[in-house]
Image (cartoon, rainbow, N blue to C red; front, top):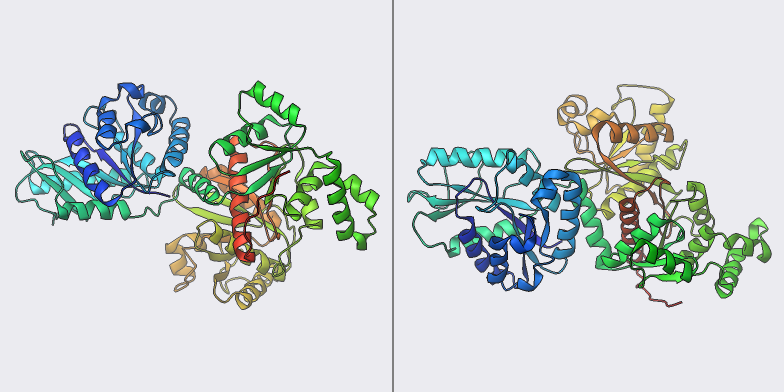
Length: 557
């Protein structure tokens, strides 16, 4: 992702226009491909003269149609929908720049109650740190400190980190630090009555703010990161269910946003007609007929070889690969695609069983398992196994833990693994606790480099205060990110309980342990679910290629 900072007025009349222009001019010296992006415009972009003047001064007038997220009116009407639009447009814009100066509230904008909280939510979802502007006019140092502290506090309650504070019309005694500032943020002071400019010392603060990473991960910022990762090395993902409008709509979005190269299974004319009816562009999708005789022969021959020990003849194999799930899976197996996503109109078994028979598990993995990426308000957890393995043995539970740690790493989550139980440490006894003890031992022996704790209760795994009482000194307790449930019953109940009671977004199930990625969709999947699952599958394919040391190949049908 591009580096970013979120510049915004924290109150009215602070001179944001001149200050923003001065900041942009100075940042352009450090970032030749600096972008300027407006989160919320006041109505149509053509009417947002203050922002357009900033674009013009930065030499970015040609970007006026793409350098903004949504309107302030849309945000007030439906915040959730507007935020999705904002993050999507920002992600696409940021991909073309190495740094982004995000423009929040300007002096000319209408001020509504809760504006700082809304600003904080927007900044958190964009993965940016905030540089708010407060007024120093007619304020003492203590009053400026209080204003700064309250500003930081209100936005931090929405998980938005502040990287610096700008004080306009600052009194002469205020320089680059504010000793009484209890928020401990670096201050950039613009003196009262002096032409707005950024000196070298303040430029260093600005650059440091731009370089500072936000470690907050919201559901929207996480999915935006998936898109960015996927498009960094595009993979060929096959979608077998071209007769489903959701799949076609998702395919069009994936192609437009250059997330993946999409292969659709179906009749080319039928796909084109349906795309026309849906008013979407699928001209860049590759459409493959699952009745193609050359491919059927190729896949049937290979499938018969793979299943020869099971007594499968060529004729039986031919009937199998006529099924779209088998056909798509064989495409992945034979490197005609890098991954497959299906299940919008088929059962989980129909989608994943072919991969068990052909793609199979990695050499170091005992079994195929699953995990859910649980997107909390400000962080990501990994829950496993919640969809595939009913009653894992201790060895299988250890394998699930290791696979889940690798999945976590692939998606930017530092793995600290909690082997869950109703017992923490030696507080409980019984066969189920013993199984977790054994699983933890096996996992540690196989991967001594991983942080693994078990048995451990959920509260001790996530709550530092409880962890200090129940398992003091543990590097995992109170800080766990990967949660391994003792069986499918507990895992499925657990993820759904958290999802429904906390509002967490559950992404998955993500299959792990296969030699090449295949993922299943819920039959109630939304278009955005399909887009995210394709991005996840593409990232898994990237990791597989890196692990196997193979280069992506491009094939044309």
